[in-house]
Length: 105
Picture 1 (cartoon, rainbow, N blue to C red):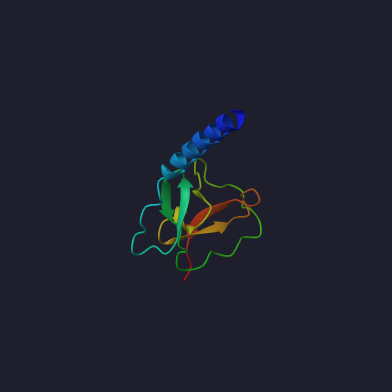
Picture 2: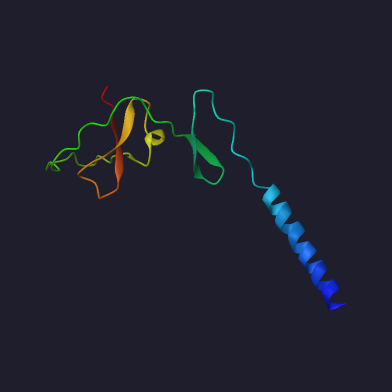
């Protein structure tokens, strides 16, 4: 009797897990011009193809007197930047941080 009750509990749990997995939405279809997509947050995808061009050379020091009130656009990859920009390292940012910069061709 105990084995039968445990089997029933296991079966109900298995059905619950299967139904939860089937409710996860698939990623949306990619636009024809996008070759790679990245998930930004649950269910939200963006195109993260690498943009044309190169990042500018990393400046050796952070210049003083940067524009007050100017907030750089932080990024993880080129998909976070405008088409004419690249996601690049900058000496003025903490290690590992990147910012959108105009691409060089």
